Image: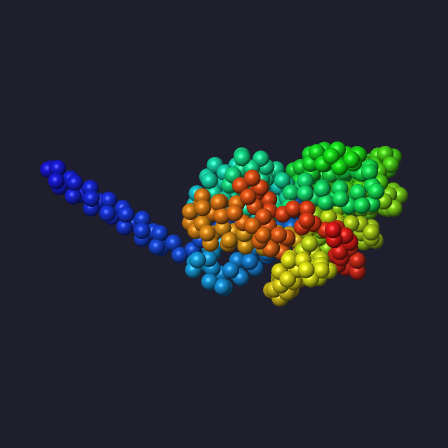
Length: 388
């Protein structure tokens, strides 16, 4: 076989390869986004609303023409509150579905942390909708991971501001043993000394049904306020037993992970005077008109109720925001994952329903303590208790 024939053959094959790649690119008429949430098992309590928030955002975006003229194609898997199933779903999204990005980490911080090991290795952008700041820190080790929720240290700084206003110096931290609870414990140990707070620590298991031993210790210690950190029904047990054990006269404050009407209704009279630190979303109607989050919150409330026949909670809000953050990144980055990551890093002053998002190469959680308020529960709904 002569050399000229080989050269011509090589050029023809190369041309076919280039043409094939171009046809494949042209054939991709969608952007692929994958999500993992827990719709069954213990974490399903949050999963229903979180999935609904995503569905609403995706339908809104696609109804308006999608992103850059392309619809978002959504791949969704139920992790069933099991980390191994969450990891299996993540592998499928990465290797079979070949998504541009993943939004949602199983509505469990521990699962999100496990998932990011796979997304980081694959260099695929991941927007977690879970709480723990360990999901995005240290940023140098998680360059592809972002979060649509506020970091624990910002929540604790907001609480420290409130305690300073009220002259409270000695507090209790009653946290569950999950990644969510223990991440907050670690942050209190950094925040408290700098803010002149003495903290008494007690822990419990997410499935506990009796917290009298821990609460009696806190009573004996003479704490001036109790901060409870959990997303499980054990938080209702703590509320009820605190009242019966004579701790009802001091502030009892739940974290943002407990802002759910169902928990408050389960607590009954024990929910009276309980405070919750939260993003502004649950009390959008109570916000001043000058707050940039208010119009988007009111719009989401209206659209969500029209579709799902119920009011959305902040868990729906954080997934709704996450999908819109993904949209912004895809608009700039397209199918180039590195450009999508850089676009996420570059988001500034985005007014979402959870607050105003600002990311940077060194900050992969977009919210700050200025996006947080304190709530109370009255007459079957959350109301604003402390704005600034």
